[in-house]
Amino acid sequence: MTISRDNTATGFGWVKYKGKIHQEDIIITARGDVMRRDQDEVMRKYGTLRAISPEEMKILLLDNPEVIVVGIGQSDSLRMPPEVMDLLEKSSSRLVQGSSPKAVKYFDQLTCAKSALIHVN
Image (cartoon, rainbow, N blue to C red):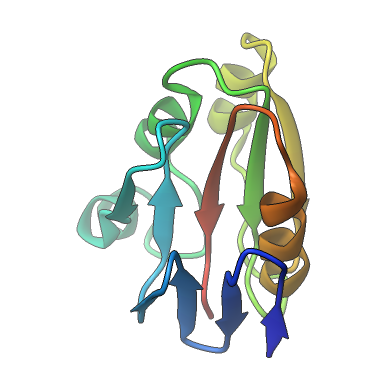
């Protein structure tokens, strides 16, 4: 388990953000809203939950965050399809991705506008 200074933590199958434990992947918008990933939509499009959809990237890009943090799972299993990378490259946001424990720690340390997708498996 990794715990960062703002009390965000993650382990296999869960992520804790602002004191609430989520047992599913979450998206944190630049406004600080938290939502669960639309797993049905991702499964229909890619046949797996280990990919980010263009719709999810559009949510992450809302309000033009300076940094988008992607936690790619406990075992680095989440991938970014080319159409998602194309959306990101058209924005002014910078992508930082890494294992979910490292990603939540980095996310908490940022003081700029930020959004995140944290994959928990």
